[in-house]
Amino acid sequence: MQLFQMKNSSSRSLLLILLLWTGLSSPAVCQSKGYVPGKGPWTTAVFDSSFVKALYKGTFDISKTHLTGLFMIKRSASNSIRIVFSNEFGMTFFDFEYRGDEFIVHYCYPSFEKHSLPKILESDFRLLLVPDTTVTRMKRLGSKDPELVIFGVKSARGSFHYTYDHDSGKIRRMQSSHSIIGRADLRLYGDKGTAPNKIYLYNPTIRLHIKLTFLSN
Image 1 (cartoon, rainbow, N blue to C red):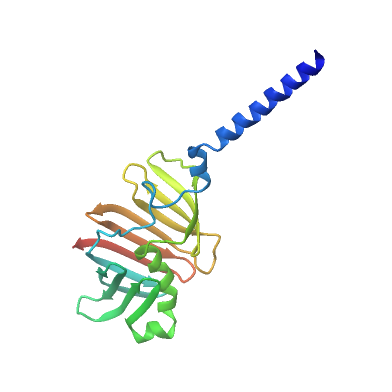
Image 2 (tube, rainbow, N blue to C red):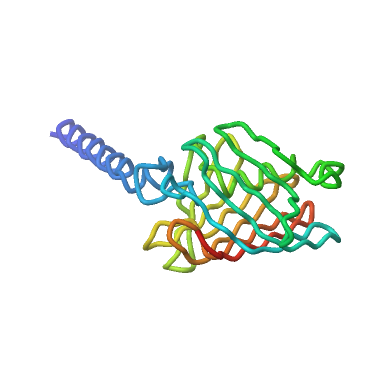
């Protein structure tokens, strides 16, 4: 009789362990451990495949240099997007293109090249313009604002915090984490069709501030 009770107790313990394991393996918990982009509302694209072009007026501040002008962002092919910064008189400061994994400098103002600015800007603008297809992990984090959803993201590019609008699923903020040299903070406000209404990009390492306000498509 005692042996039967011991076996019965062991069976109940085993059943309890299996139930707990099944509960911990539920889809909701798995999603919090590792979310795969493209299989739900949260993506890594600020400008998705439906985006064609957008013109912004903006300011560009780095160290003691202050510039104002127009930023044209345009998709020239399914795997290519281009950003051109020029002043109101038509003088071009830089013309960069992201074509697949390739970064192409069509033009850069000579004084910018002396300070290796294209290389520094490459990763910052990549965060804005090119969806990250190398994500290996997205872990949902706590958010004090119920209208925002935050994920900790790891990919070949590094570690980031992505903040999304809860209802639309659109990105509102992208921050580099666990990084000193390549630190960046990208904030996005409102929407004008397929483009953000305002874009703020800040890189404290090189004291870079870029502020863009949408003008037209």
